[in-house]
Length: 136
Image (cartoon, rainbow, N blue to C red):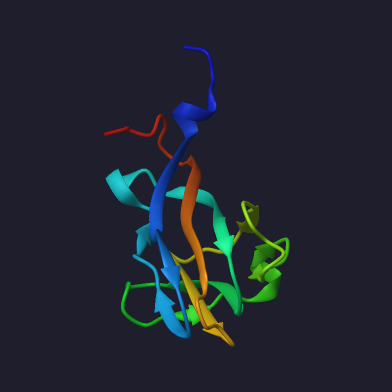
């Protein structure tokens, strides 16, 4: 079988596409060991629609048990976590993860917003210890 990205990666929704205003929203937990394939790498992808105002600071959080969350240490990130503003309409941001925790999620804190901005995020998990990844 020819190697393809479809066989070694899987995208999982962490933040639904929505308009967000002031406050913090935590994304849905993504299990890097789903289907017992133990993905060894992951990437957060944040995509935006229209950002009218405010600052939307995105961070990647990790957990061993999907209940106690902490921000991923800079040493376990590749790239810079995005902070969306009104100049980021229709943009795409990528943030690599090379840590070892089982669960990941996006977390966004929005401040200074009146009407806010539209954006969402997915986590792509890849390079499973057991290949290929089962797509459902």
